[in-house]
Image 1 (cartoon, helix red, strand yellow):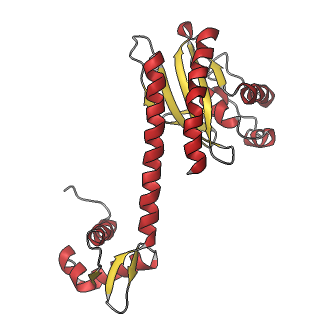
Image 2: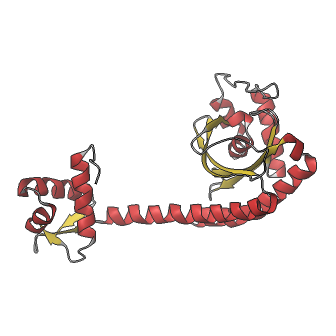
Image 3: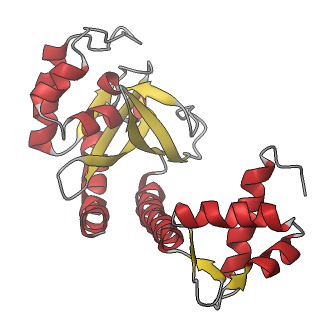
Length: 253
């Protein structure tokens, strides 16, 4: 096994993994022996995990067991996996129909952060990567996210007036942005025409929680010559078709 930089963290996680395999719990001496730790080190680790809620200690048996915090974290991880599995499945449905690049994004301050992607297999396609960021104000994903905020919140977000132009088509004023967001709320989807990348057009939808806020946004991107008004409407229809399934999950989770 490769050396782990934080040895204390590694030992704590190993103790949690060990407790996870012993439903009846383990005594301090058993933990120390199994992990090959001095009793004092094992005691400090066990007490720290107990204070933080990751483990519990029964005075009558002297045994440590996993705490409720571990259940909460595990349930949260499973929930996220279920959400991503559902979204990825819905993305695949649309992708199979149109074979264009698709992105899943989240808000990161004033940027959109790409967290998942399905590439087009066509020879001419959009170049991007998971982990990249693009400004909210000039991407379809960003406008879809911003459309779930009220105008006052959008104005506050850009109170310093910084809305950089990435192409000659980028909107650079809050008033222009608010006008577009009004159209997004009316139609249900956002459109970007060469605002963040020249010769690329995108269409996107928000994926909202029960409070009406965008948890994610989902888009289709393609070269402008393959994304006329007819194609935009078709892609929007496909995205809007899968939106209720994903939002139902997000809103009932």
